[in-house]
Length: 319
Image (cartoon, rainbow, N blue to C red; front, side, top):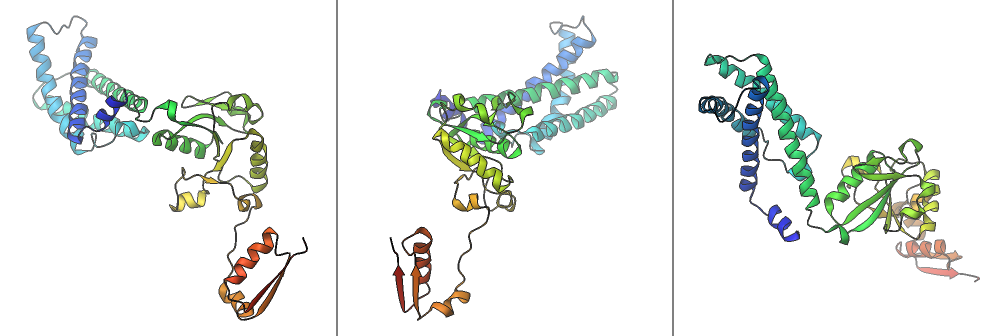
């Protein structure tokens, strides 16, 4: 299966576009056949004169539809990354195509009632959109990375940030989202793209196949973030967090650029680097004494002072 999926994803662009255009051509044919059958229940393709009539209706539709599909970018998008906007674009194209088809038929004095064109529009949209959804699901299932080799993760936060993070993770292929965790009771026991949403107080039995917990609540208050982080410490899982909304919106980072939780995140304030222009004149070529120099704060303070070129640095520690 892995060899097949690699071969499938490595096909040239022109070949994939040819496949999609062939699918659309077959769909257009079925749309006309089904439309004629629905309107006239005695209709059968095996009658030669009706076959000629079907082809005379199909050829103009294909000559109108395929160039519009090609030049408006219907075959440029990647099916496995399809979103709802792709479906809206397909519906808009088919609306325009059916309108042109109606005008061409009227130009050649081929008159059908509006129900005929409406049925073609409905069937074409339904079958083309369905084919893209099926292809998207097939490509996701045939992803080169094997699910058995993926690292299971849980996402804390079933909001928009959690959904975007899950989409990015499932596309990447290194991790697999096993469950969502959320504080909102109305989300418990629901599913997001097939992934269950659980109560934070009842997740112990759901973490057996989870290696990491990702906190996807970028705008959570510091006190609440600290509570969430402390509650997750008892599960013996690595806890990571998504970047801040400010960094995501500004483009400085992506939502799936996960980072360990630092002490600054729990303090609720950013770290401030020393300003050489402010501190330098009072330290440069001077004798500086640091008391409690063996602790975490004192030792870091000594490292920063050394960078400012003192004449002598005296370290005092009573421990």
